[in-house]
Amino acid sequence: MNSFTTDVIVVGAGPCGLFAVFEAGLLKWKCHLVDYLPVVGGQCSEIYPKKPIYDIPGFPQVLAGDLVKNLLEQGKPFHPTFSLGERAESLQKLEDGKFRLTTSRGTEIIGSTVILAGGLGCFEPRKPAIENIVFFEDRGVEYIVRDPEFYRGKKVVIGGGGDSALDWALVLVEIASHVTLVHRSQQFRAAPDSVEKAMKLAENGKLGLITDGQIIALAGSESLERVTVQHNDGRMESVECDNYLPLFGLSPKLGPIAGWGLGIEKNAVTVNPTTYATNVEGIYAIGDICEYPHKLKLILCGFHEAAVALNAEYKRLHPEKKHVLKYTTVTGITEL
Image 1 (cartoon, rainbow, N blue to C red):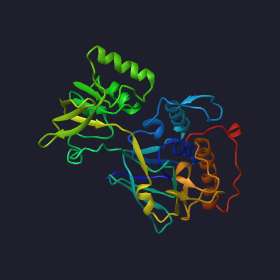
Image 2 (tube, helix red, strand yellow):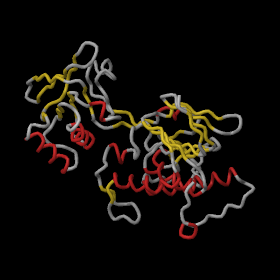
Image 3 (cartoon, rainbow, N blue to C red):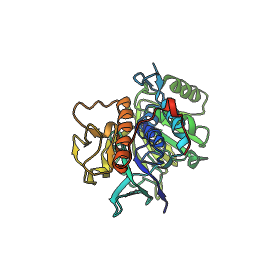
Image 4 (cartoon, rainbow, N blue to C red):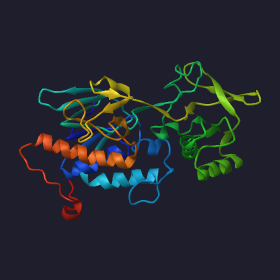
């Protein structure tokens, strides 16, 4: 079992959680971030990494994936640690006032402060309506690619037509023995560059491409052996495979956080709009996961909330100290 001790436990490694690392670092605090997704960046990385964002101050346009890279670079001097691919399951307040967070994989993190930055909540994969799909989960069906090397030399079928499906098809075609991409339409919802690359690979016989069809059945004894594709014209086609990746996006749910004794409204955590503190002392919520009057669900607002919340927490933990906000233009950035 892994265990970590830190100053600030950040639940959610999206843009707001990553910026919290920077703001905490300015206060000489270290952060440990927990996220159910296997990569940092939240929706920006998993759903639309190549989508341009237009409302980040100072950037007339920035790709979502590039924003994540910049935030990681900004927080690097403060050496954050991560538990990725793990869901925050339980949170316990200890006798000394600190918190112990336990993840779905049994990892324990001890910290003095908790920042909830889980976006719209815990993202769960959208599962296709295939009768026996649960039986094949972890027996050939995976909803998230945690390690591309796991698929080396295997026959892989990917379902979906968005950025995630196309991006992983382009990666795995270089690793797996064969990759087949199945999409219900001839129109893709992915970046044009990714679609163009996939089409060229299909034309050259390096990528199997089935459009106007969808997977309706899975078969195998102990593990997945083949899938059945139903074409829009009614034809059936069997495709042999070792793994099936249904990459149809993620569905946000508040998840276990809903049972932590926090105020909940509109499927979000209610906070004090002047500090972003929850009803539990030492726990704050920022970004899309929090709710207060006139709340705007914008990344730039989450950045502001991170700065305010952490400075408010510093005052709470150190009431004897006079806290004067120091500008980075004066102090610069000092590594922890």
